[in-house]
Image (cartoon, rainbow over all chains, first blue to last red; front, side):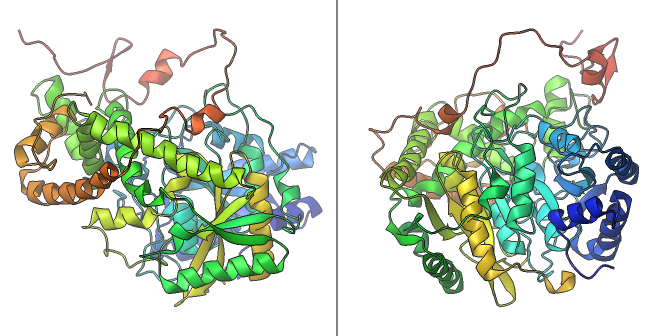
Length: 484
Length: 107
């Protein structure tokens, strides 16, 4: 097994020089998966055509037709549609579902020459923060297999942390890229709402969902997002605004940038070692010439209740489509159409998905709609206004811990959903406000990685890459012992 | 699945009858044995969500969220849609180019 964790740019250099081939790269990734995945369960399924697709990439390169990711193996979270390759969403209900088309994000990867290596594990329908809600069993954290990798994009985070792939796609509704990235010690990017097409991403909370990227380095994450970003006729919310030079931004200094440390993110519930890591990150950015000072985002304490009303309300509507008629499995007890719907959904969905559908149905029901959903929409606007006021006051970005604690033990929060929800306390705000956010590892504590996140105004991804790259230059990258 | 009226309970929490009614509205069967745990979990979550009532939200504009920053318009042009055979391919049961469902009306 190769001892190092090769990145996207190193692979591209090897391919360009003729030192290696896409077929060899796929072979090396599969070798790592064979060696490491039985204990970690990052993947739900490998692409049986990966080697053939790599061969095609090698032929294309020989002809001089090289896309920006030509021959690079990439993993895809299993709630993004892949034509001809099962897309289960981690649900028993979709165990055999094979899409007829690629999600736009996947199609763009393929168009750039990337090879889809396989589909990664997730909490069922992306509902969870630990990957323990997968119908196919949990993934495990490569830093300590007794702990969760985070979720819902836990499989993608594990795959990248271990070098099974150099980068992976994930998705976010409340922190599902950043939280597992922080727990596994890799870079995770949640773009601005509308920066990447959601077409073919199985919907959970449509006003919050966004396709994201996980990679071993900031520049590799930037390389992937550059391929994914841009308008799409299949998603009316995909923004037409030009895509900035993310790769170039990674080389820029942070001197002169103004960064805010929101005091509400450093209060009760934050582990001291995570607080210390975030303060150290702020100090190093200040030493690199950034101006760092405290700011306030006063509505932060209401982010989680706001999130769990809006996200569950949207989920209860979005998941209505899984009724045993158009896709997925069907359970028909012979009691008519309604009986088939209820049996299919009752047997097909796991406990967390049912909990969220019931909660969403409750908060949207007559008599409760205004008190819960209507009020949550207004809180969401206030949360966004908090950020806008900070940015209007001249701050370029804010810096916070990504998670309140490092990765927690498997099983610790499974029977206490509220405690699980609170692990998203620092990440859900970016989804509610629609802002871009990026997590980067800055240290370890007790043998577990710790991340900080940077949040900026709408479509400021280049600036976030610039700040994160500066952090990476001073802190380096972090590799789990098994993958070092 | 359908928005409906749920019997309102005075303290905003759920009893088993309300839970069953929500399950009917959401087209879900629930295992009776799971109801006590489920009710307790939802009660804990709703107690946390009740924090929303603490904030004065009168001045907030619900339209002020991120979608405004995106939402471009595209040309109003007819484009090809999903072919029927592709749409039917993942369905559990099909018949004569249609999705087949269990009998809706008796007789």
